[in-house]
Length: 115
Length: 111
Image 1 (cartoon, helix red, strand yellow):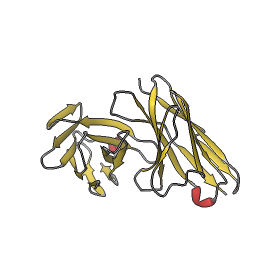
Image 2: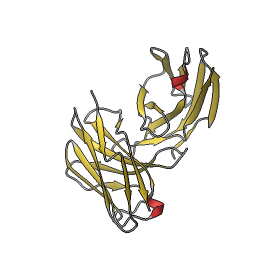
Image 3: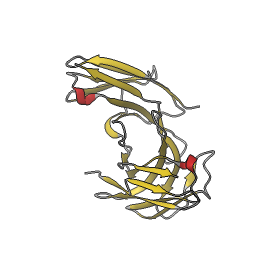
Image 4: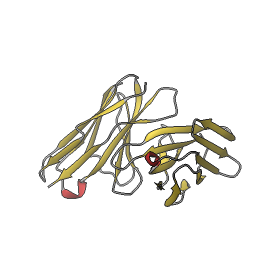
């Protein structure tokens, strides 16, 4: 149980385009999903917290107009990187947590490269 | 404030035992997590301690002392595949129980 998928696993896009990353909880309902960013050999940096049916809560320094988050259902959250630039290249990881539970389960991550 | 500290790197020998320490300062304690992360992959859940003491799960055990703000992950009978980063994380009490991660400890297991 507690499987989280992410799609795509890798994406290369051109500067100025937008990229959408999907995060799905496959065998449980995720009332809360989290989006992280990770640079090489660094720890995870929380970008935002999303709850189903409500607006995402962004961490300080994260541009909400650049990183659009939609949590449309209890099993799906999406992160859209708008007008991507090379500095947005990173490993993006989502996690999901079921209601009443404390542990988060992570998706396999999406490696974004902006050229 | 929130602060989590753990050593940056450790090395150990195959078959040995290694202890990875983590100290934390959080406003309102809700437990402590350990995750394992192999290079280029997402973290996988290892353990969650809420109460003081040692919890054992096969080759991995996790210890917590709330009064000392201290935890450790103990790995026994080390295998080469245990080479990974080990992340200590604590929920932040400021809503939604978001996790604050330590920088991670990169463990290298050698023959």
